[in-house]
Image (cartoon, rainbow, N blue to C red):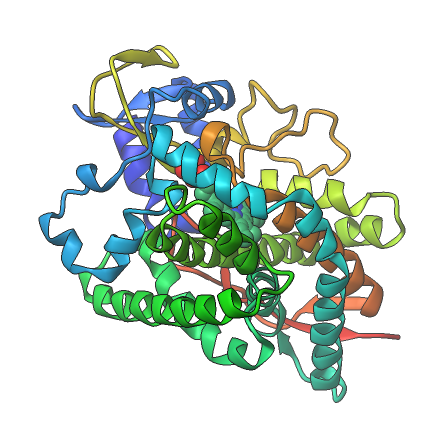
Length: 402
Ligand code: HEM
């Protein structure tokens, strides 16, 4: 099989279900492979790292969108301000202001709130399972925890959260929009969320609280030239969609590893594997974000020529299984000494929510396993039909507390 044939196989249902054998074949072809005259896929761990850390590989922005009517669509108007889609000084300016409010201290301070949300969700799950019925982990836990935590972080009042979740989910579809028919629903979600954040910003300006939105408003009001209201509000919607399904998938992918191999759960339960090490290996072994992309310039990557404007896809999920970097890459081993997954990217766009996602996983998994002594599959898992974001739609389980 050549590289194009392997990529064609990767996007079939079988490829999406288990891309790893295909990645292994691609690794045999080299650190990077050309995919036609204007595209290259980067698979090797070191090559991916070098692309992500090289500012000359810029993130694609509105000027690269091959879609002249983008400015008619609220989601793209917002997306044009998302730090994910910016490069150079504008990226640095907006990202550093967001980072000023999204501090390690704020994240660490969320731990008690995360623990309470986890306990409440596990309590509800236990009640539902009390008569022996199956529960659905994705719906009842993995989907609810991250979105509730982001609401807590930003400062969205509890009363508003319920109606908020499905809208956030609709907007998140933009990351994998392979069907233009989805655009009206995504636009409607973008419009609704922006209106919501605009209203909440007015409330927080008048009466600031200890939350991310109040802090960002204070930063932007201190000097109007630093962060415009549109930039601020548009990046609120980014935080929501970037941090939601990704973390949901970290939880689902981790649970599925435990369901397939109960010894992985037993090691976490008896303390022989620290929660943070477990989370790190889940991120490596089954990365919730499988790829990201950059716009190329005249150079070489992994021995392959790149030219100006070329699509450069960095295959994070493949880099995490690179045999040149990881011993026995297909073995789940939370105690491996060669950790360091690429799952949060690298360089200027390194995930701003990495510490929060890691904390959520490290709080959630031990509490889940502590609460239920038995967790077993209660039917076949249903995978999400996505490739960039890797996770499940349904993971039915039975749980009990002997
Ligand atoms: C397991 C969960 C998560 C994974 C796997 C993940 C993955 C990533 C990756 C790979 C990137 C870099 C994209 C690129 O280089 O093009 C990124 C960027 C980003 N992530 Fe995350 N993320 C997660 C959770 C979160 C959370 C919880 C938040 C916020 C609450 C968040 C907010 C962001 C933002 C705002 C960016 C853009 C940063 C920039 O472009 O400068 N992520 N994430």
